[in-house]
Image (cartoon, rainbow, N blue to C red; front, side):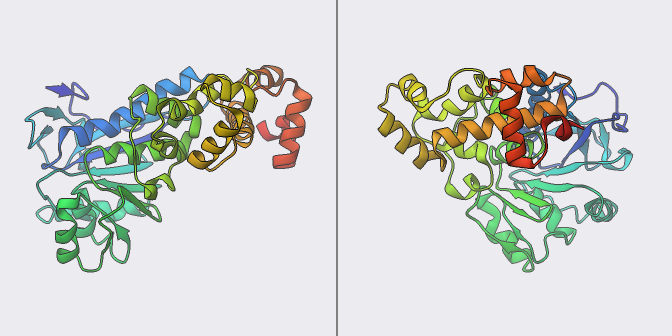
Length: 337
């Protein structure tokens, strides 16, 4: 039995963290709970790996929708143990993720919890659902007049039972304002990966994707939502691994000739293929990654300017100064302050 805590105490939220609450319904499947938690947990490790010790890490809390802290998967029988029931949570929540499963649980029998969700919807930065967790949001009235999705098996029922919800059965996940709904199972991982990208940047999202071996092909709709998923989406395995290699080797010469040679392709064919797959020329992508990585290190680390300039491949502080003034109108030092 997998435990997230050895006691049933509520977390108050550690200072200087983004608190992620995964609220598991009685119908939740183990993968839909554990997958998102692993994404956020892995992001903390990847931040340290990238030297961004000042970045705000995640605190991930598993909560139950009733007094029973045990959450038993309806498919595998695997049991998870929550930290606390929903009503014992305290402290500010950054992102609230409601996880369902292949049995529908709407929360209709628990009006106090639904009222709590309505209150939290006004406070949290993001409110999300995975699979049939969307039915809980719909029951609380939080999906009225919003686009939403759920597992393809239940999109028809969601539309029938909650006619005010604008149900779209096709995307893996949909964002409408601060509310994000995911189709189910592995799509919850994709959703959380996009949230990591939003919070911590493309480099951390790609590092998490690689660490969790999430290189899978996705449809065009969510590619538009998450750059990280777009990079995973290419069918050419060496090419789809190139962006993370670039991020980890920014200090090296990364001209088109060097990148094409690494993949054993002609410069012309490589440039055309890269641009088609990723919507950016290789040179523009490298420049963007150098600038974005430097921005993150300035904000999230104590590294001196010359070390950041070297690590990001600018060659000198002067070169980095010019890039920052062109992009932001400010010097790197002013940006850091």
